[in-house]
Length: 330
Image 1 (cartoon, rainbow, N blue to C red):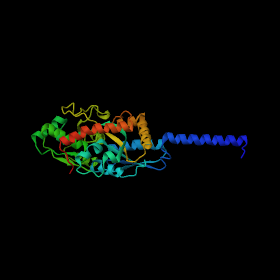
Image 2: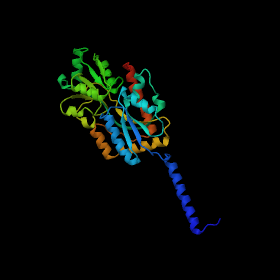
Image 3: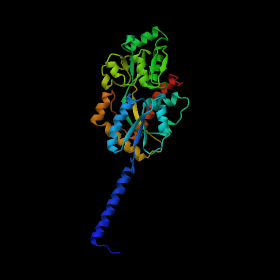
Image 4: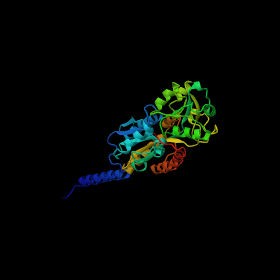
């Protein structure tokens, strides 16, 4: 069949456009993803730091991906409930986990039986920020710093109870390390959520506790709670005037972080696209300023593989501490 010159140009143009489309598809490898809403399951309670940071990322991400990104908090069991739900979800790129480092690094040591395999069932996507945890007290204690708490606990064995957001949480682990270092008898009161722990601290139902780095700050600024110290390798943006535990004599420089994870089986192209998008968002002034306002720093860009390698390195530190303290979830 003979074609006119116009018909031949039309066929050639169509072929070129089709080839370009195939090449673009090959470059991204994500096909028509995303074609429906993405769900981010947060290992934490509504309004806590993890929920806040996840929403910052989700709000920016849905504009770039041009699809709704829904945040769903699932508190309880130091992130185990949320992580388990994502580990058992389809690996199609539409379900993600936003979790603190403790939920990923410490649970496998302190839990006698895990409902999923963290190394096999969850795929690291990217790290989101770094920070520490806060040691706070009810003002009626009169404590101003770590040494005040230690002195009282030594003089009054068993009388000072402390709270954390669950057995096996970062706060639980750090305080057990402090107890071992100074020979303290301080009963632990684990809470299902940070919010309920803070409520009891405000009501003086417990005297001291470790919390996340951000959620109690309004109460500290209002004089309703007293910040005694913070963990980590540095003083964090919103608590520059608060000495670290290391500065107060208890050497503990490990940082915590939040991370994004996907179920096993999620296409590598989707993992890489999410990694690139979230890293780019963290590099922007808006996200950085908002994260610093929540007392967290933005971390350097990492590929998904680099994040996975850093998780293994951190796991050796935190799990070693958990084993030394002989922590077991009850």
